[in-house]
Length: 258
Ligand code: GLN
Image (cartoon, rainbow, N blue to C red):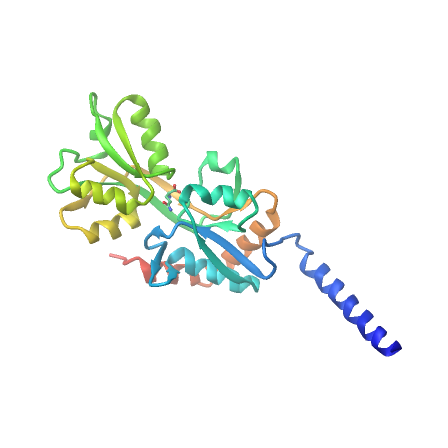
């Protein structure tokens, strides 16, 4: 009996010690041993459904980060505008969704180092009267602009065009729905990130991406401000994965370099 107590005491001591070690950095996850990522899997090639699995650049980089940290990755697919509330509300550890770093978002979340560049581009129908970015800003312009709700394409166009009386906004849950309405003629253009734009344009005929970009941006991962140590741990993992070429090889797998 005494021996059993001693063994139990020893197990208890080891458990406490291990717990203390793993908590040393101060990083914690919503579920022990699991890195819970929220995304909006409507954004190829960064995140999209392939049969019953979420794949893409973000999904694979996140899997490599989780492995580096000794955690199991779980990915939840939610609405894009629910990602930051989910992270700040402690329901997920990180938001990774081709998310652009903006000053407004920085007020609510901590961002990791940037791992990719994004460009907001304009998709039009072949033969459109819109031939460049400047046409949207021309005096008297009033185009119907499609965007994915709450994305930077929406934020910029609303502020710079619609609020100035130069455009009417059409907001969609999914970028592909905006593109569908462009094909149908309901809207005149779609402002969206360049890589999803390429993927959507390839799905339909009669569409093209204008050469002039609307805005250039940095993508990063969003974390709760209450868990800075997790952001730091992920930054460390990310730096290692960038240095050893893992991040680039994942990007190259999904993006054809011309
Ligand atoms: N980069 C854009 C943003 O952060 C779009 C992201 C997305 O639709 N997943 O707003």
